[in-house]
Picture 1: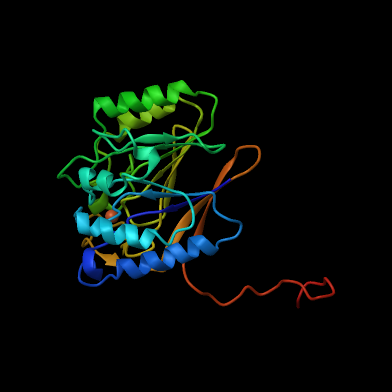
Picture 2: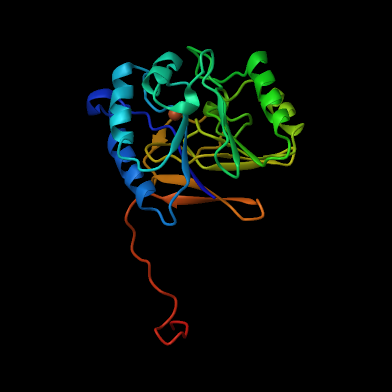
Length: 273
Ligand SMILES: [Fe+2]
């Protein structure tokens, strides 16, 4: 199984630039083309929040127009830049979101890997929070299928990254979520967004990652008080490849055209010298 993650697309209406500089629509267009042409065919795409920049209906209209070019099934959850009601209205045609009212969380049961989309948003706040209701939902949902390898995705990471100006707006009660996850040994991975950088860690034996950004990246500055800034590093997506025996491996795939591929071997089978 091959799963792709794109995150923090921050689409604005009328092709407006994010932060007056970033053509997020053009980045998403390039990312969609990258996903469509990737071989072997990607089974599903997760979109881990901040789909639009300001949560407005017209931004979701622009987003859906861009996503209409995606030829693969996708599963989206909101981030802090989304507005839950407008997000749900914009994706009302998506069966996996049917029944979501208070929170945009759900499971996807169609793949060898069970997918759980979590909603870590707290209206009006940049940081994330999982209230008791959502923590209980996660616990009960995991308890219902203890034998199935499970992949969780959410916007706010439940851990610190060392990028301090982003860490202050991570999932504030991440320790509570990790305590729930650690009870359920079938959880293979938790994929997050929000930080606009590729990050990986292991906590309680569970692999966690943050998706790279296919538009603007948060600056990699691990000093105590950096200036909150972004860069236009090479855009990328994360791919999760699951082997037949169920092991999950993650790769970064850079979006764009690069020199190559150049074969290692001569036509006669000898290694090029
Ligand atoms: Fe974001």
